[in-house]
Length: 337
Ligand SMILES: [Zn+2]
Ligand SMILES: [Zn+2]
Image 1 (tube, rainbow, N blue to C red):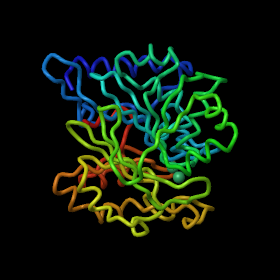
Image 2 (cartoon, helix red, strand yellow):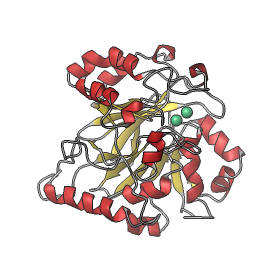
Image 3 (cartoon, helix red, strand yellow):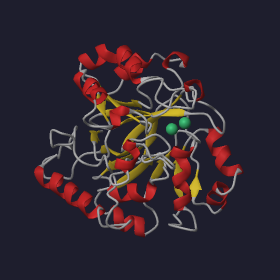
Image 4 (cartoon, rainbow, N blue to C red):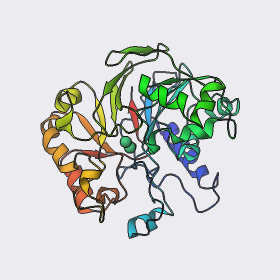
């Protein structure tokens, strides 16, 4: 990323301090650049042109966000001034003037303000902010934001939604989501499972089914590849061992893997049994993928629960994760595609 674009990005983040929630709210607590002062994976700028395609991290918290409702523990109290937004990505192709959303979170209002693509605000005002919306599954952190795109709010013009048939069915058959479909605001192109499909000639994407509590829909991870790089977005999985794929091989196939980092240890959530909220623990994931990281793959933890000590920059756990060469997602992080 060149210096001008970086400063423009910071100015954009600064402006967020004033709008849209008034003075105290500065989305995102994790919007500050990492300690080295520069977002990782900056957007290389082709000579004389706009930057190439990239994924922009819009949030890194588990579905409940941070602070979580009714949580007055120290970490959540601190996060009231600097919230962590719920896990999501924007896929941005400046040259083609395309913007896609990966998961529509309850924090969508603030997250749309983080999108720095040229012309994005104008196209949002014209009620077509996204060229497409990718949805992983029907848990609250991953699709509730669709409500903010309906007639009570932005009232988007027809927008394609890339998801599985089960997820489509959930949206078609249940209010209030069904109104988005009935009014033609969301359309569902046919997309294959586990096979690459073209997205407007700017990216290719692939849905990989993953095992994850299937109350309302199935769950997928997305792989996205552009002309310069590729990313895996896998915010939720019950257990690596329950997957019919080897996570090490999947990580081998991409440049950057954004993975479920919900919990660091099994005793984080007092009063809830960890069997009720199954996710791989971060140290276990690191043990599985350590040799990949050593070989140069980037593994970035995201979707962190508000109990996860990795959310504290100065914690022993965060230092341990970074010391082993893994990364912790922050809003504002860019990944070349
Ligand atoms: Zn989730
Ligand atoms: Zn989930």
